[in-house]
Amino acid sequence: MTGPLGRRSFLGAAAALGGAALVGPLAPLARARPAASRPDTLHTPPGFQPEGIAVSPGGLAYTGSLLDGSVYRVDLATGAGRIITPTLGRGEASVGLKLDGPGRLLVAGGASGRIRVVHAGDGRVLATHQAATGTAFVNDVVVGCGGAWFTDSFNDVLYFLPAGRAPRAVALSGEWAPTPPGGQVWGANGIERTPDGRALLVVNDNVRALFRVDPRTGAATEVELDGGSVANGDGLVVHGRTLYVVRNQDQAVDVFTIAADARRAGFVRRITDPRFDEPTTAAVHGGRLYVVNAAFDSDWSDPATASTIVSCPS
Image (cartoon, rainbow, N blue to C red):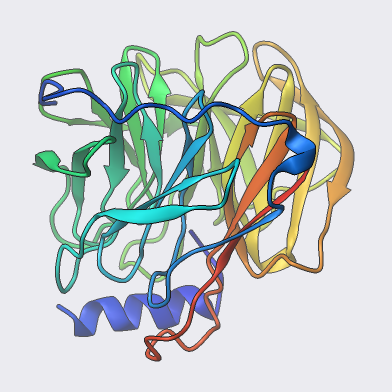
């Protein structure tokens, strides 16, 4: 999550507002329909500002609200959806989120500094971890390299959450460009695994660069990019050897072919779409790219304001 105007408005509003085991079975997964018959625009509920996205193998998509931490689940085949986790209250947010192996949602809690584990079937909050205190913004998450990894956009650390344990901070070092303190400049944002699964990819909005991070040490090495841009980079998606960088304020997704070890990447093309409205994250499913519109500059004080998830060719 970034954006020079939208993010300031969001943080101002937030300031004004002030590993558990899986319990019970998950809801049945929807049967996949042919991509041609699926809706290409999915509408999120009024008063629900989406940011992150996770998609199950069966085509159920999950997104969280920046406004109150609620979680919405939608069937990509039909467009039918419902809120499974109701509002968590003032000052709460659900930013990036991903599904783990057992099917739980791991959710970044934004300015609250919290990480939540949520039952993907009924939306119950199974565990809450306080990863950070003070000025922090727990922004995005990826599952891999031994657990779940979360970025903090205001602090040069990753939070590592092993299954069934509390999170710990791993300092970013090496070639990582430090983020100025105070919560006015955004650093680490989107995060993914390298194609070979051995390291992490983290975009640094402060210097408009992409870094490969050793999960054992936190040492970062800048990825060599041949063309394209990661400026205003928000969500990252790695699908095989393809890297998608969602660039919110640029209303675009840049597509790269990336080396297996992610030390270099070559620009392939730029995806633009008139339906993009400050897109933040994306997921690939069924040969389509599902892109979340956070619509930062919309009037979210109006409870009727809503947004969309849009589908485009991957």
